[in-house]
Image (cartoon, rainbow, N blue to C red; front, side, top):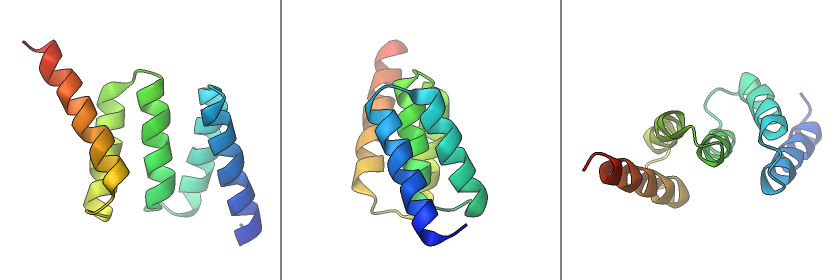
Length: 92
């Protein structure tokens, strides 16, 4: 995939995410992930989609993978902490 196409696709995926079109965003991000399984930003955005769709276990797993690949990814850490806080509250 050409770099420009990849960038355009990524931006389209973000547009869908922002506009609550989660399934369309997910399709795009997953197709980009096929090109590079360890693309931290694509993984992070898949995590955001999963979180938005209330698929919290999957979102947590994805944010953990992002942090495994890039330990200093502040946004992934923030979302993961929020999700862990949510799950901790549910178990009380």
